[in-house]
Image 1 (cartoon, rainbow, N blue to C red):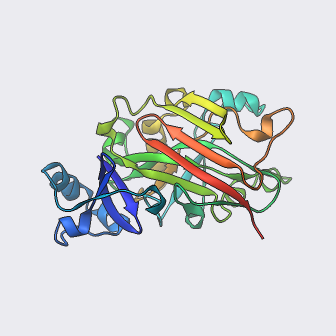
Image 2: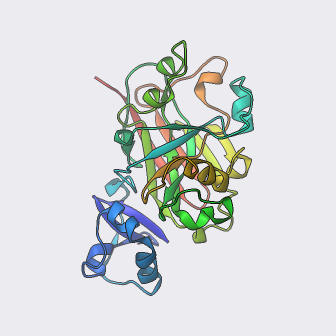
Length: 280
């Protein structure tokens, strides 16, 4: 099942059409994504039971972030070995978790506002939590996932690498630095949710290409590690890390500029297209 945010209202997406959840359920389920995720088990049972109503043609420009106001946003640094190698970093022994602030989250066609000439791209698989949990075991982790989506962990590198210590959270949380979308895809839609092709193009040129099976710590391990310290809530996002191919490790280095088009894609999920604009 694919769940989208169409003009601020949650909808089921199928074959290029969308079904408004609140209207189709006669108000049983909310149009608000967080409220819907808090009632996820009941909603999915209803939806799989043959939800129907007025199906409308889906317009891509009307898509918003699948979860526009998550309460918590977690992210992983150096979680692909090839990215660790290109950055000259040692692969971590434990997940290196930081936070992105929820105010950076935008949708799959929104502009990315560049605050400087040092903004970089990072395509990522993003996990959306559907079932709350503490101390979740990795064997049970996927049962806590509502679905996955695509994300870009846009990073202002000058701030990130400001000495004496890395500034991960603030450098990756500027307004618009968290594009997500185009929709949430439930794990049962994917042949193997632990092994998906993932790519990023800038103006049509491929910059990143890998598979999520190359993650150092996969989704089950990440949920286990994060929930050991923090209570996971419905609608929480986990940006799982980016593969090799970012701009700051290239020779010469390459950063996003005004007018650039970022195309992010994940097998079985879809594609996002975000235009870069220089912030005034």
